[in-house]
Image (cartoon, rainbow, N blue to C red):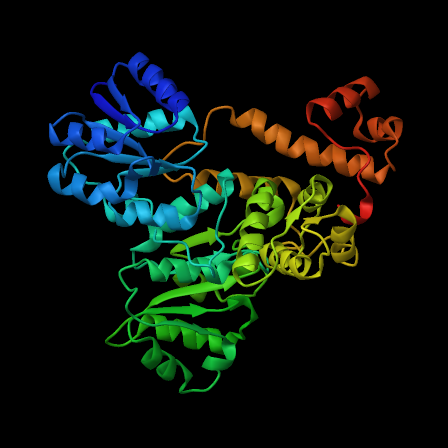
Length: 456
């Protein structure tokens, strides 16, 4: 890489790491813990790329972006932030940041993005290349630090200001409708209506015309498209083909795997191809376990703002939250936190209180529906392809093979241990591996062999 990078972050360790990495890559680096100093350097014409934190001791990095854009329109700014919400991502794009990465960030990934920014000097990124925020409203708990959620944020940003139809897939309670609403609220259609309809709204012959009159060129969200009958689906096709003078943006949600919608005859082929302009799959809570603590804190804080006493989970209770299957996903987690906020007798909520709330829940919930005959290899291929697709034009961080093996091997051993009642000899025989090998894997993968089956 060739160029000068301005780094602004109040964390000395981050400044040191970035300075060393960028210098080794061939860049000149100026690093500071002050936005005032950063803006002085920008005003003096220094720097070819800026890497800036959001929350700084003397201000908000995002609030500096309009001035940087006005003074130095060709200077790319990469925003890094520990405020890992979809709203922060959207705010970064609204302020015309070149790129956005959450903390903790992957250093090789940041280096690639910096190299790309240096290569693009003199060219503003297209709107659909930017990552997209505003202050986080209470009703939108789309928060997450996990790679799955950060990749989702980037995908939302890329499709936000296009006119492509969007199909949002995911289990019940993951926030499909919230994702669709977020895309509308921060798009160029934000001042126009956002209308959600079901099959019943379109069943009447005059239904499509009435719906189009309501949406007036805004966004039309069709809820659970697979639950709508063939005749009404045909009307939707005609509505999309001839929408009238004020064509809306079409979106739809589904609890089915997108690839299984046509195979199972749930969605007409002509309708599927019209809706499948962009597909967003919202991960289940089981797929982003590390976000459970973040979401729990978010919901406790919301309950406190609404008048509930201050509450938090004990260490054992938090661990039970972490290992629970959450069949109802984020919505179930929110309801559990609200109930605990109101019923707990002490500030610190015990494991027993959590067991009382979760103990009568089903052991596992219905996962996203897919084809009944899908082979394991096809399912793995589908998930891996989605993982690559979520990274867009960027490759996933290095070390992919090891991460994937760990993600598959860990659950396999846990399920095998559960099936054999925790008997390691039987489990090793079931898996076809040596018992000592099994013990080593249990240790290396930090697998708990004493989990209670009921709350898995």
